[in-house]
Image 1 (cartoon, chains in turn blue, yellow):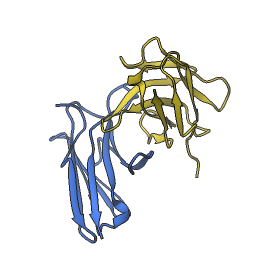
Image 2 (spheres, rainbow over the protein chains, first blue to last red; image 1 turned 180 degrees about the vertical axis):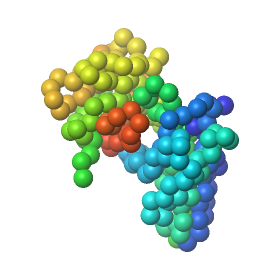
Image 3 (cartoon, rainbow over the protein chains, first blue to last red; image 1 turned 60 degrees about the vertical axis):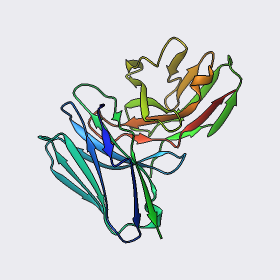
Image 4 (cartoon, rainbow over the protein chains, first blue to last red; image 1 turned 120 degrees about the vertical axis):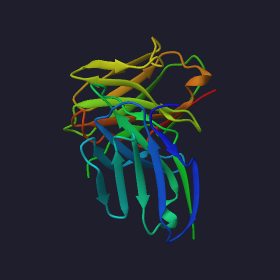
Length: 111
Length: 113
């Protein structure tokens, strides 16, 4: 398996419910970033969490990072139909300046 | 709010033709990148650029690809002789430092026919 794998691959929930997406990675990282992509559109940066941080919040978003398990989760609370999109984690490791991406979780929020 | 802009949003080109994809990174950013995403697949790193030179490139970034920062604002990706498999969404990104957020443009959808 590859760096930055998200699960589930697809998630369908009702508006108002919470959505949790997970990301696992293989190597040590400097930081991990979550992005959102609406169908066929650009990548929108959501949150960056550094390797020495365990949790970060931004509005309805909560990201956790467990470096011992090499995993991160993105929680969207009180979801809205407009949250429907694909969500990706991307890791930044060592001196590498590039981001390594997973396949993403496709989230559908049904009104 | 500052943003990365890319042009064109969509380009259709004949196989074998040269294409230039353009990007204007955020003005105070120092690190620039090109990524691509083939439909339904993960985002793939192509090249990073810092201090007017390539700092890293992937196996995808072969001799057919080149990047340039011709002036203080633009950052371009050139594909010399396009192939069908170059069809993808190409994203430009920039960041202030290597441990900060990377901001992406809206992408250029390249279709090679």
